[in-house]
Image (tube, one colour):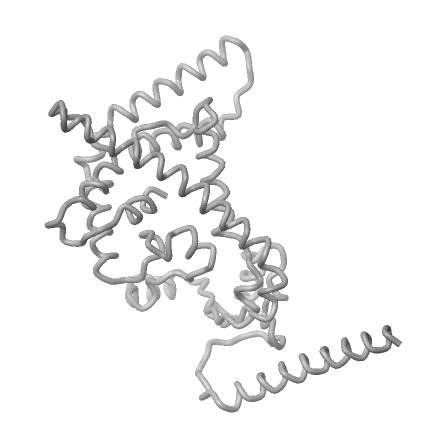
Length: 305
């Protein structure tokens, strides 16, 4: 008797779910004005064109472009997308109409990791975005700053060459691509926070692994963000990973900033001077009451990512 009741409930649930989907689909098509969209393949209810992507989305896009042209429309779950595969059309999107398409998709992983989209990569176009762009172009990528960090690049390159020579003399093989990544990480890390992030100590290894995890999470596919009906089923484990990575990142950055602030106080006490790293510049802006845009320590923290 109990089995019959469970089967009946399951059947009623499925019938209700399918009916709701069909009614919402019909109502959405009749209530919304018909838009002049680019060509598009046949879509499934709820899931849209997700079934067409497969394990290699870039290959799927290539096949769809060969059939539907260089500009076509896809609906991934409930999220509309326009796919561009022509340099000429891409130029219209990225240069001619840059402001209209300057924002990035705001995923839940990006929201949590970037302190509610405070990172330059995710903030919407506006005064803060323009201020950060000007700061980055002048202070980080300007010739003056590149010259200032020349000694760091030279030091790390010398260490890299010595490492290769030692391995060669010992007739040991070297995973060259991995070592080049290590070299790049160390240069960037020393420019940013005056310490290496690819070394032999546990903390350096934790920072490196954390950055890789953050990159994986930001690029990961989360079904709940495309199909809201499945959010409670497939997103719990993903959300827990995001929270864990955010917590670990917060702990490390808090330690780095605390150490930096202590070093800055000591430098002021002895009236010392030296090359400022990127974190020093961000802290200067956060402490400057006359700055064009006031920033917080939290914003300084996330810009390092």
